[in-house]
Image (tube, rainbow over all chains, first blue to last red; front, top):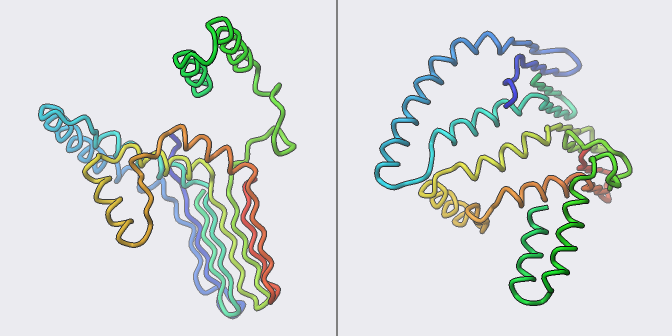
Length: 93
Length: 140
């Protein structure tokens, strides 16, 4: 599993001038996400245990891990949209 | 390799090949799988696997779009469908079917995913519109 993106860069240019520009260090949010992840996994493990007793084999914990993998793989996404008046650029690194 | 092995065993079970022939075929499959990856002939002329899918739209009117998505994200997203519990997957399939997309994600196997990713290596879509716009989708 890859580490999630550590930064996002966003730039909006209008009429040749930079209207909005931000470089945000996403890694600062990781400590905030850890308690949320812990609660999520506790809930999914509990649900999986109950469902397993009921005879179901699906796993919400694996689903949560899969979602985390998808988030990790978003590193490297770049979107660049340009029209006559405006340019929008987003990069996850 | 496991798919080829299964096919050979199916042919043997159906009586279409003899035990000796099946043994020779299995030996050949295992020998090919044991070759290092660099020894395999590259399909697209280079040994490197593509890492990104690029979508580029160049318009004569100044509307340009460039999107670069890691192939591993596509792979992870498709793999995610196999983790979705069955009741939820049925709901998803039903919603997609109501919207006109009759794709059964329940039948999507990890093996199909590997074949899809492999096929994307050689995919290139080039569209030149009459007004000069160009759309290009490729993996590199």
